[in-house]
Length: 274
Image 1 (cartoon, helix red, strand yellow):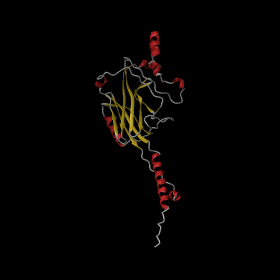
Image 2 (tube, rainbow, N blue to C red):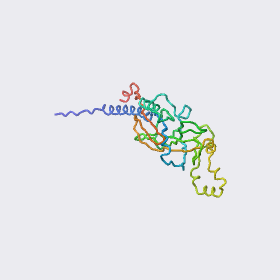
Image 3 (spheres, helix red, strand yellow):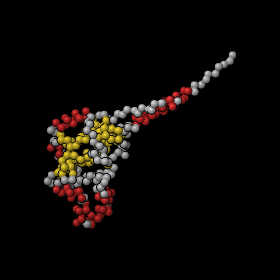
Image 4 (cartoon, rainbow, N blue to C red):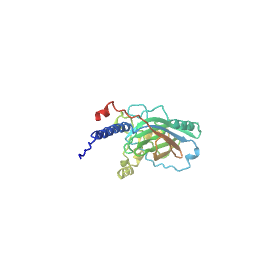
């Protein structure tokens, strides 16, 4: 009896390859915008006067801005503001504004391609009343994505009055088109070095002028009575409101994943793969 050999299905491997290519293309289309998020932010002050002196706030602060930074405005090298607000965030913001206990200092909404925590730029923040070259609220925050979303804050709230404390404010980084020689950054390692301390010890008459930055001189018209700092790291989930608390001021943020449709493959691409 003659045994019939089963003919192998030569088409099957090609079908598998074609499906793999199709699925890969679809995954790539989703991942191209996988890091694009919509961000809503509000920072507000607590108007309760008892909170101002209920704790002893340190005055030996070392406030600095990093070099990797961006702004939220409509200029060229910046994060572009958007008019849209997430409905849940907008409802919370409305309640906040109706409360006499809290005073919004800054509200902003923007879209951003998020990076890892190591590469995430510092987003410069200014808000509240302006005093000379400074605002009540200054500092920066970072929003990053890895396995989870991360928000790192380094914000400071200043109280200006008639008596100056042992405080100073760094000037915000200059814009990209300003001269580098006017950079506001200070060599913090040198400031804390024994050589610099010895120099000041040997030149007591110059201690005040050398230890003061140009920004301090600008602040003489608006003495700084107090500065409190919100420096926190928070892990978050997308599509959820998050509240970062501080006795003097607070922050509400919502980071929403921007949903995009997959790019459809060109007609005949599967047949061509087959």
